[in-house]
Image 1 (tube, rainbow, N blue to C red):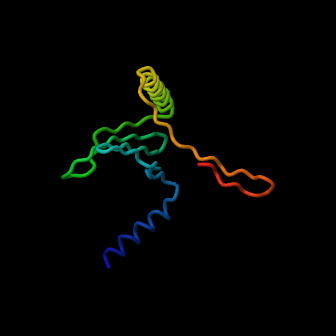
Image 2 (image 1 turned 45 degrees about the vertical axis):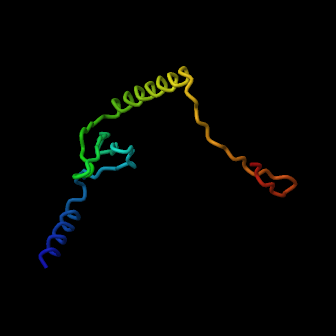
Image 3 (image 1 turned 120 degrees about the vertical axis):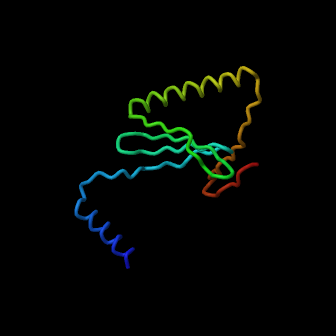
Length: 119
């Protein structure tokens, strides 16, 4: 019975003060590697980036958190793009083999009949 009363009070509070700003964040899908995870979310006018590492006994532990405004986010995007291009050029110059994907052709229409894709 006590649990029901607490929920009822919380619901009434939300209806009484609907114009209050909430701190509900919009979260994007995290980026994973074997032992690291990057979470990106939006809170108010800030972009929050969290780096977490996996520990066998504890699970995901947040190591670093960054809050960026829109201007800083644009600059971070610019710097990350430049770093990606530099790494890609370095790989191309070193002669590393680039693995390409096998692309399947779309079936073409020939006199209204579909032809199977060539493999």
